[in-house]
Length: 584
Image 1 (cartoon, rainbow, N blue to C red):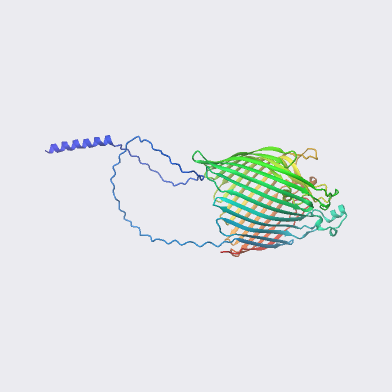
Image 2: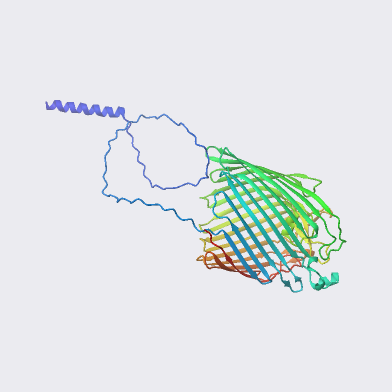
């Protein structure tokens, strides 16, 4: 009987072992390693949900026999009481700003800003700015200037996707053509300073601008986005100049998926710039004008048209901007309009967790040098100055290196081909040599530059940077002059450098210091202007969130620069306060 039980047990064990070998797939893999949680940085993707059936066939037929075993923990956590959530009160807003100051050379300063408070649909407000000076310079008499501007602005959002914005501004600027001494005035015109009225060499400009913009904020793929803008401006100035400008611009963009993981956006941008220029002199011109003044009215019409289709691709750490620009130039010579083509390619790549960013650009474009642009670049420009379109083809390489969380370096190399590049020279029609006219060149320009920035939270910010410039193939080509090749362009420095530091001490004391250097450059009459350097500083004490006091200092190096025959004010000091009225 005992032998019978032993034989039966062996047969049963053999049968069970055979069944396990035939009916189960017994394989176990153990993987050991350290777990490192990493969240990869990716571009935001907007793709519609897609249901994908990925049912496949398994090579082995797995059968799992699970025997659940309950494990009891020796630790029993205490129960957490339910927390009551209390709505946080809205923070106090500061939607207004007033700054008042006064300095030497009789220099008043006033800035006012006010806007509406929280609102998801609308924003509106007003800003007012004023800065002027009413003093004199030894041997040069009064050197008054003033800038005043007021702007009304507003924005409204419809259905959370359509935005309408507008702003209306008025600006008044005035300055004196004071670039002559008492001796020059007596030698050229036989007059003394007391016999000259300020209106004889005072230039005033008035500018009214109205902007209207409309756009939808649709950025998802497979949907169209668009915006349209209208800008109407009117500039009228002393001695009968008037410039009326109408600018119409807009674009359409469409987002589309790319390889199911990335995104592309196609754009079409178009812009038309139309100008009406007129000069209606009343027989007077700035002091020292040699030719006989005229009262004939001159009127002209100029136009610029630009069309720019391009596509943006967003890959993992790689961005590609590819397109071109077609420009129709009816501004330089309205009677002989010309068509120009410009490349529009930018490739950017981020490496090593975004610590290094490289960018290569091959671009181009054209901009109108109108009267409003000329008077902002050079306030001593002659009335009815020559206007042209500056055209440029640019090759640029930029590299950014983030050395640490606090230190970053940037370097760039650029090469530009320019047509009708703008600079200035003294106008021979003015005997006092105090009025400039524009000068245009065709040239090639090499630029090497870089900056290093150190930011320690909000307490300390240091920046050091500079550029080196070299111009090649400089050709002066004007209708009334023979084509001339020169070695150096006037009023173009060889290099520049800037050093700045900001210190925020416990959000109570704010300090700012800036030093700038400007290399040698060619002035008028082949005069080589020496290197210029400037020092500016500002100190602000914040009494509380609403009230602060400041001291601004400029031209602490007491330099006389920038334009020939125009010495500047030395050692500017301005003290003032800022005040903000808290609102609910």
